[in-house]
Image (spheres, rainbow, N blue to C red):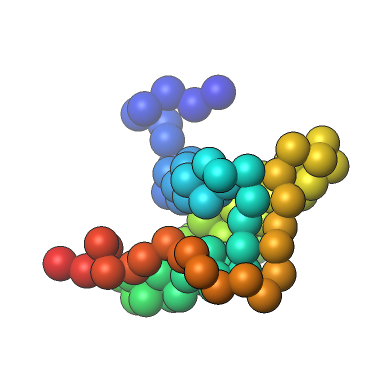
Length: 99
């Protein structure tokens, strides 16, 4: 476990990915529009601002997507969250991130 002084950008982005997954899954389902909105927000806001890479050559902000996907796999195994493909009546709106 890292302390705040030792926290890396990977830790922060990973935490953001888990947070975004929790928000998307609060209704116990995740729809394709939510996944697409996260990818758009990551590309539009974090990949543009932070062009750093880890030791494996992965863009640092990709840890948001990686953590979101990992959380999805963990919950899919337990069966507590379902992913609904194709429904588009709900999405995480990137407008709240614009400023």
